Length: 110
Image (tube, rainbow, N blue to C red; front, side):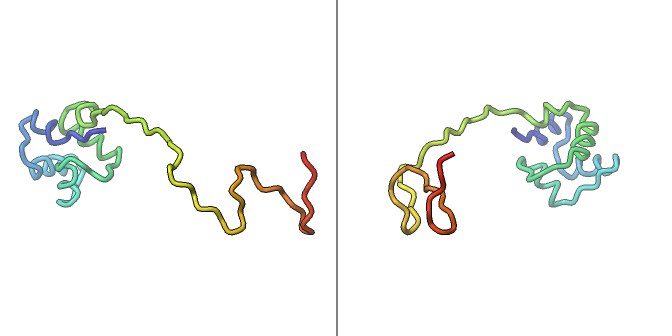
């Protein structure tokens, strides 16, 4: 998702973060200068849905104007090219270890 608050505000003639901050406070959402800076700069760490409700109400826009979907890049899981270090005493074979009893004898197959 791309955060687009600044452009949504500019489309409504709001050019300063402090102006939007004042308008939000008039609607009951008091935001610190630090948090407002994060919202205005374009990459907020987090935002409450209730705060987002007030923001879209004050701007008179839909959520889709503030949060713009971006294409998802799929991450393909690949096996590591470097072998994983084995624990001491573990063989290099791919077979799982044989379950054993406390006395050391192997358990019968299932």
